[in-house]
Length: 464
Ligand code: ABU
Image (cartoon, rainbow, N blue to C red; front, side):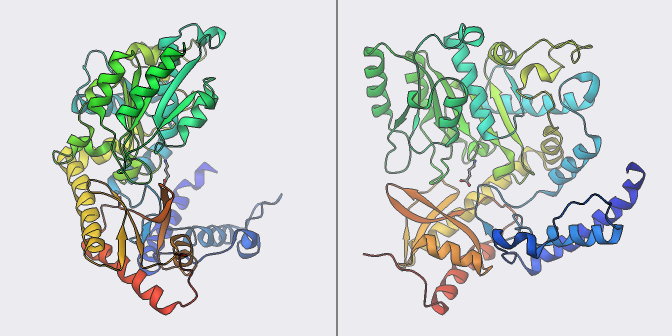
């Protein structure tokens, strides 16, 4: 009940203190098998209310035993670590509990969201008079929205009557799996996505794309959308946006840059060249919950010509839009009706540390990734599979089977790291996106792997 909020927040603070200590003392949680979950934890929901102390104890048990994605041993996914000012902003969003649909129900939060979008548009070079943007639920949704806008631009009939042309979308074989799902959801069809081969560094082969486009056009099909990647999920590779933009312009294709993983290089003077040409894209997204340590999810989608965002996502609703204009009723450009305030946490972070601070976060992560690569490169027991200018460090150690090694490290609560696959080779994928990590934390990863393998004789080896 709401009258308990003060007491609950006191408990919250106590629990958070414990969690922060636990993250340091036990950075990798003990593992409980999914099958035994209900035996180990009291997850039951009952008709009668819980006794308060009992409720707290059960909740505490679950929280302290949840995988710790902010510890210095979490390298498993494309997110990790936390920026405290962003956490503060997100906690306040929860308490404020506005839905980002109209000015009437979120007031200054509209300005907060618009300021973040405005600043990003300036950084990427979209025209300030014609851009628009929104905070979708994640990278998959950003990609989806871009696909729908591209579909409606090429075939405006489709919005009301369904697709009337055989539309073909393009992406690289290294792109995010949401491209296929989104093709299905949008009515394009999974079989109408062309997966263009990647080069040895995981970047789309532009000449292969051109050949495929020419063949499709010759066959009477309608190419309409290219999903280029700035930071592929496995190798962290960056497609050549400048070159791709020329191809897209020539063939009237919507160029979406999926920077969910790597798009935040726009903040770094040193690394922004990796998305050179982004100003020519039709849409661009990145996830601040990946490389910037904002809580999940903090996704940003920018669109060069705002009319496309309105064309595809605006819908009349008299019960909702009752005051103010469409520029300030942000539901007019979003997929969701009830939309969480995901902008405040990013604004808090940005306001507190400045663009300079955000740049430092990115540069530090690339520095740590370089350090890891150097370590691997200089030690002949390791094989390196990834390349410079990437936050994803892919490698194998001796002839240990990476799938088995990652799983055993996890089961023994040593290290949270996953594996990836590229060109039929499986390797450990170490994702370096926690800017709170130090050089020592990175070198510690290799120490853990070396010690663990030397004292566990049953680990699987790769067959030669
Ligand atoms: N967008 C999710 C990518 C997940 C991962 O590879 O860690």
